[in-house]
Length: 129
Image (cartoon, rainbow, N blue to C red):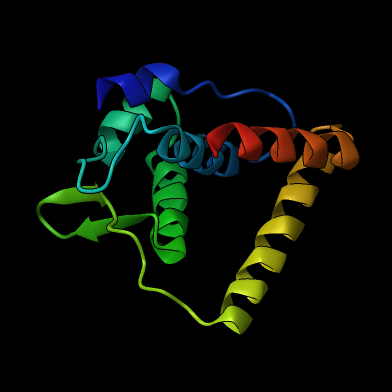
């Protein structure tokens, strides 16, 4: 848990803080820093550590829950979610399209060339295989 808090860096880039937080948590999930069932820092711990408003953290956590990345358990905390059940090819295509559009918008907002980003994603995917 502490590794997650230490790895988070918020920037004054024009990208909303809750989006930066959400994306960095997702990257940590993808990198294996967090694994399914791990308990997340509390929203209050996250807000204090990052010196941001509690509602900003809540917004990021709510989005992560909607995405299925974490599970909020009232009175117990937030946990990295179990992998989602298999979905249909059509639903997967919709999710891929949505994620691609979201990633492109984030890249453009950060001043990153979308083609360069796509090339980097391909290279990283090959490394994972």
